[in-house]
Structures are given as structure tokens and as C-alpha cells.
Amino acid sequence: MLGLPSIPAFCLRPRDPRRGAVLTLTFVGVVAVGAFTGCWDRADGAAAAAVARTDTSAPAPAPGTVRAEGTADREAVARAAAEAVAEGKSGKKAAQEVVSRSGDRWGTVYDRGEYAAFAEGLDGHWTGVGVWAVRAQDGMITVDGVEPGGPAARAGLRAGDRLLSVDGHGVTGLAVADVVALLRGTAGTPVVLNLSRGGADLTETVVRERLRIEPVTVRRLAGDVTVIKVTSFTRGSGDRVRAAVRAAPPGGGVMLDLRGNRGGLVAEAVTAASAFLDGGLVATYDVRGEQRVLNAAPGGDTARPLVALVDGGTMSAAELVTGALQDRGRAVAVGSRTFGKGSVQMPTELPDGSVAELTVGTYRTPAGRSLDGGGITPDVPAGERAEERAVTVLGGLGVGS
Image (cartoon, rainbow, N blue to C red; front, side, top):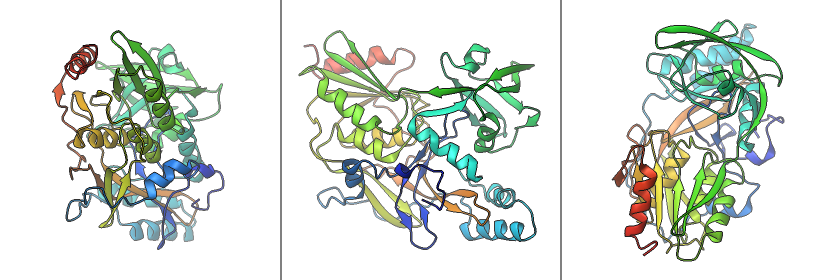
């Protein structure tokens, strides 16, 4: 794949015949926890077939195409990298400068090692400090979440902290992927973080660890309600969702909790949606104006009452699932507006072995909605007591009655 033997074989994806690139949906940067990228997972035959198949009975894609704004020109990026390499300079740095000038919000450039580490997160494990972060419009890197029990949490880091430097390297204005590269390293080694909190500067030394996240957890509530929490669509998560639905009490409702889910493998997201659908359209997407479709596998549970819990941390692949279930009348969405990440990235290998992930298009829900920038508005708005509201909604759908 991409000529990068260090990247796991399970991350094989459909190739663009002109460049040998592979289609991805890249999700918001996840600092030191794993920046998950959307791959078509060919290791799972059923999921892959569901992704690749065009279901002629599905609703037709909306007419026209949606071109993502602020996209980098792939040829210009590759040319800049080639010229830099010929001059003995960094191809990655030259390519990143072109991407930055383009205004491509999600575009970034990885060196070979960074991309291998990026792919590692797809399997749900990584080496790092255990924080999620995003880049604000002013270029500041902000901690968006902290892994409970992880090294960053034990050091006292909090959501909302602003990261100023890593081991003396200033990070303001950097792409999140570059911050990930600084935070990653060998388990057991320290990393010094300079932070800003409430106007005060703090310095914390955090020791990197080998971390792993359980992407799907299940618990039961009173009244035969099953809560399926999906934190990310890493490998195998889609089948775990299907298994949890099959194991739910007959006649009971399901609460699919996608709050804080920053995305993951597209095939896993499609498999998860398939647990509640009997085939048909999950989403359409375009790559430089050419529209394609994602379809659910047949045989899902179409009768069980279903609520999808969402919030501002529900991103990309998680939005894809929510949009499909909402548009097809399969689930009631409860919570707050989702993040709004609906653009498609395609990685291209550069002359020095680095990889540029560039925005090439957007995806749409079955009803033709583009979520990029706008996100999903829940059917039932709810704040901190969203789970209670969801239980009430399920009651209205006949659960426990």
C-alpha cells in the first residue's frame, strides 16, 4: 500500500489509477492517542463487500457534486516535494508549506515513520501520553480530551488546556499531525509539555506509555435498554456493534452512544450502520467530482427502537453513521450538534517517501446532506442529561411499556 511496507496490510484501500493513491476519510487529529484515518478494510470480506457493492435499489445520489473548499493541488504539492529533494532539502517540509498556503484545513504531510504510527492507531493501540487535541482557528493547539487513567491524566492535564510547546518545540500554528509526531516516541521516555491554563503557564513532564482503547463497550439500563458506546471505529468495532445488537434483550431498545467519537475506519462505520439496516444506502461521496456510494450489508435489525446519542465531539465516520440512521428513519438523534467533518482525503506518496493527505471532496448522507462544516442537528436537543432524554425517547418508542 502506497509503497510503505511498514503500514499494516489491513489498511488497503481503493486506488486512484492516476497516482496509485488510496481514498480515505481523514478524521480530526488525535494527539498522541491515534489519529485515525478512514480506510476501506479489505481484511473483513463482508464489510469490504458492503462498501464496494453498488446497491441499485438504494436511493440515487443527489445530483451534482460537492467540491470541498480550500483544497491543495496534488500536482503542486508533489512538484514542490520533488524540487526540494533534488536540492537536498526536506520534501515533507516543502510539501507542507504548499498545503498550508492552500487553506486545506484537513490536509497534512507525514514522513514515513509518522504515517506508520498514524496507521497503528487504526488497530486501537499506540504509544503516547493520552490526550486528544484540535487546532483552533488562531493556530493554538487545544486539549480536547484526556484519556482517563493515562499518563496525561495522572499529570493533571485537562480539556481546555492550550499546548504551547513539546520538548521545547513551539507547536502554535503546526498541523495536529506534526504535534502527534512530537508527542509520540518510545514507551518509558519523558516528554516536557508547556501549557497555558486560564492565562497561567504550566510545565508538566509526562512519561509516554503503550496505550490501548476499548472501542466498544456495552451496559444495560433498567427497562431492557442496551447502551452501546462506540468511542472510535477501529478495526473490529463494527462487528462488535453487530454482536451487541444481537445479544440485546428481545424487544428492548438500543442507545447507540457516539458522543466523543472522533471517527475511524470507514468500513467499520458501514458495518456498524449495517447492524440496524437491511441493506441500502449509508452515504455517497465524491472524489474530484466522481460520485460513489457506500451501502449497508443486508440482515440488520430494522425493528428494534434506536436512539443515537451525539455531541460536538461526534465526528466524521461517527457522523456518517448518525446521518444514515437519521435520514433513513431508523434512529432518533438525541444530544447536541455534531462537529461537521465530512470531507474526503486522499494520500499521495511523495518522492522522499513522505505522504501528503489532501482534501479531494466530500460525502453526503442518504438524503443528500453535506455535513462538512454544519454537522448534524439532533432530533431531540439535550445537554448534560442527554442519556435521560434518550431513555424517555425510547419509552415513547415503546421500550418498557
